[in-house]
Length: 325
Image 1: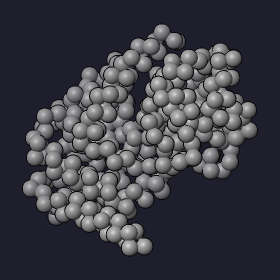
Image 2: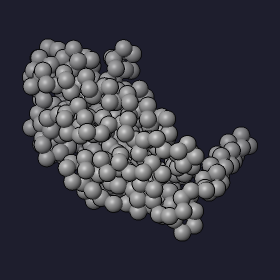
Image 3: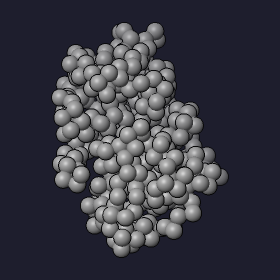
């Protein structure tokens, strides 16, 4: 009992320390604009606004974050504006995984090198989901059936060239299988609906997107594409667990707050302290979970490393996808 109390006290003290550090800001002196290159009301917009709402209490009194939705050009317009802003910390942007994809699809002139990663509130792995009454009870069942029936198993995704289509291609390459990819250009919602209706055999999506149907007993998740299990579904294994450590299927759908490249070290450091405090805030964590989002704790260089890794991965995947059309 004493040990548990001691651990809890350590956690409270650690959070208080982070909060105290965050509140000692010498910057900023005026409101911070945060560009959200997505439409209002979507998952990225919701997570960005939640993050900023909880972050404002760590800013100097009278200073707030001001979110601005700029979805034009599939979000590229907002990314370009943020990349070209003065690197003084007064303009930030909620980047998404498309930042690692679009440059290799000739959709954007900017990439991760144009930004300074600060905090990724979302870094959800892709997952493989089947109907509850599917004959594939385990990931091994699915892979075995795919090898025995090349090109026959129908796997829905959110559109040709989109993240879950590329995740499926990566899965095919890593596992040595051939699947029939079924794109739903309207997004992952219709793809999941098609699976619930029995029109396809599986879907590749994030766990959160399928959670309502999984909780209702309509769908079943076979595995997640990450190096560790996903906290919202702790009983679901990773691909590596089931298929071997050499299976590099790791692929995440992330959203990350960033500033322009070459931000001054002191400004970058202060912003990172703010977002560390947010990430450690239990109320923020619960608010994100209430939205079906498992909050990430990736900050600073961890975010930049993720952006770089994914840029390199998608460069290869997108080139391979051109050869698999």
